[in-house]
Image 1 (tube, rainbow, N blue to C red):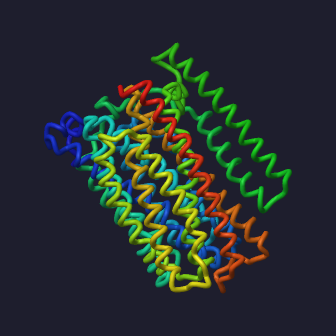
Image 2: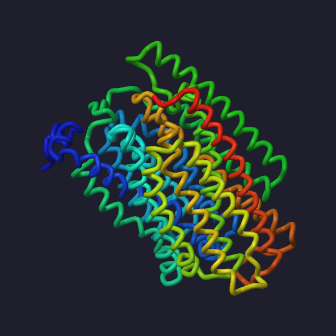
Image 3: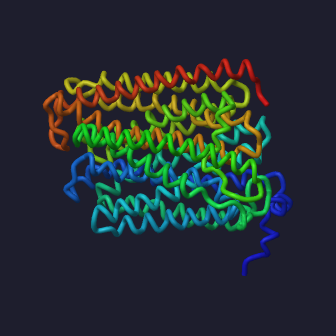
Length: 501
């Protein structure tokens, strides 16, 4: 029998577990976030196998990755509403069940549309979960502890994608692509057990969940979903379709964005006039009046393009460019993942003392350098290929380690506490929107450059022409990171003029 709901409130759990409770709560959501992040990245080592099994082109097979991220991107906007209406526990546990069902369904799917549907279900669950840890860190921890908490959380979370590709590569080679879908199941089961013990039934701020509260902004959600799909399909049509279809889709995405902004402004004004009734806006545009948050959002979007684009591109490069097996790819990426976990833990402590712009700018420079240096890998020097791959991958992960614990916390520290759930949702939405576009962009640019060099993109023999195409795609990602540095440096001016609140 379940204990009374009052015993599961935030205040009751704090009294029950004492000072350590905030760390137990963070651990509980960390496990679920690990499952969601693993499900987002583990598919990349199976893209070539999926492509061959269902006889798909590379641009269609990559929808197993980009479809997940499109769903995750849109569902992030619903997190504040779900938390306010159903509380932490119901929202979190519901997402874990959906993620578990998606993993099992994907593993047993016998057609690509079913695989894609399972990936979309997983993406919807992962998107709602992603903003929750930042909300907890900013509300449950004191300012001088937030960097350390973010670093510890980040270190734990990156261990999943660090180890995941290695295990996933072995599973793909030994048991096929289906096995990777089942990897999230034990994490989901563990997260459900932890949620029952440590996650409160209340909503952010310790308020009781209000199921009679404001309605969900369905119109805004539909506009955001339609705009995201038009953007992603428009990017794909730029390479594989006609100029007219690409222009129509990208133009439609722009119009839907304008319509979304207009709707959100009207919804916010209506809510301010009638606070006890109506609909909460899906995205509170007034947050962008805070210049630090606005600059951080720009960095998050551009950073998302580079991060998720490279997460997709690196395994494909190693398998289709260098002809390495899936299990070998995972082994090569494992040291970089472990270095990332250590870097995040160290930088998390620095984030409590060092300005955000400095840490984020250092990270972006290192990330850009790691992409640019990939062009130094030469098929004519086989003895140097693996050491250079490991070295440049580690350099890029050190860069990520400087960015991850710093960006979200630094961008949202000046927001009012009541706006933290919305701020976390928005900044994660923009990062994932950039990520969804980044995966498609890498696929498009790669196909374009492969065709320009007269090469073929397959898993057969390697060729200098194909390597040149991959090199140019990596340079594109490096240029995008350099662009993000410009926005990150503007955080310095904002901090000097506004200071911390």
